[in-house]
Length: 459
Image (cartoon, rainbow, N blue to C red):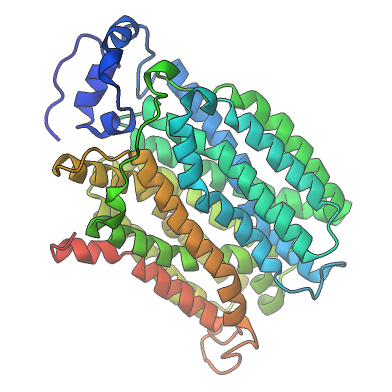
C-alpha cells in the first residue's frame, strides 16, 4: 500500500478513502449529490482508529459479541447436562441444538447484512430487537420437554435473534476502524473466548444448583439487562443520510476463483472446527473419568486460549498477506488435533490440547479481514465495480454456517458405535472418538488450501 496522501483533517471521509486504498470506500459508497452534505459534516466526524467514541464502540461490541456468541459456544456444558438428565437423556439430536443456534447466526448473515446496508436508518436499533428475540427464545426453551423444542427455541430462534443483534456491529466496525481494522475484529471476536472462560463454569454451577429450566430463565433476564445499555453505543460513525441509500449489491465476487477457494476452505474448516467444543466435556467425562467441573474446564481452556489467538491474528492480519496468516492457524490447529489430542492419555495432555487448539484454530476467522481486503483490492483491478467488504464478510459467515450445520449430524455418525475403540494403540484414537479426531484434524488441514493455491499462482 502506498504512502497515505495528506488531507485537511485526519479522520475525514476523504482521508479514509485514500488511506485504505479503496477498502473503506467500497463499504461506504456515497452518491454524487451528497458532496455538499459531506463537506458540511466532515469536520465534525469523530476520528477513526482511535478516540473516545471509537474505543467505546469497540468495548460495546466486544461485550455484546461475548454475550451473543459465548452462550452457544458454551453449549457443550448443556449437552453434557441434557445427555445425563431427564427429560432429555437418551433423546436423539441433542448436539443439533448447539449447531443450529450458531448455524442460523452464520447462515442469516448475508441477508441481515444486506438489510442493514439497505435500511441504514433503522440499523442502529436492530440490536435491541435481536436482544428481545434472544431473551424470549431462552425463556421459551425453559419450558421444553423434547429436544425438538430445544432445537426450535435454544437453537433456531436464539440464532435468529443473535444474527439480528450481531450484524450491525460488523456494519459499523468498518466505519470506526480503517488501518486497525484487523486488530479491531480480533479484539471484538476475542469477546467470545473471554465469555467462554466464564460461562462454562457459571453455567455448570447454575445447572447443578438450579436445573436447566431456571438456568435458562435466569440467563434470559441477565442477557437483556446486561446488553441493552451497551446497544446504545453500537452506532454509526457516519450520518445515516450519507450511507442509507438503496443500491444494487455487487455480488460478482461470489463466482470468482479467489473467493471460491477461500469459501471452500472456510466451509471445510468449519465442518471440523466446532466438534471439540461440542464433545470435549463428554470425552473428558466418559473416556478419562473426569468429574463435571474438570470436564467443563476443557471448554474454558479452549476459549481462554482463543482470546489470545484472535487478538494476535488480528494484529498480524493488518501487516501480513492473508494466506500466510491462514497457514499459521492451519498448521497449529492440525498438529494440536492429530498429535496432542490423538495421542493424549491423561487429563493434563487433554488440557494442553485445549490450549493449543484454542490458540490456533480459534484465530482462523480473525483472518477474514484479510480476505475482505483481498477481494476489494481485486475488485479495484477489475472493471466489474466495487465490492462491499461487509457482504464478503456476510457470505464468509454463511459458509461457516454451512459447515457448522453439517458438523452436528455428521459428528453423531462419526462416533456412533464407538469406532476403533480398543483397536488403536494411541489412547485418543482408540477411545471411541478416533474417527472424530481424524476428521477434525483433516478438515483443519484443508482449511489452509488457499495458501497452496497462492503459492501455485492460482489465487
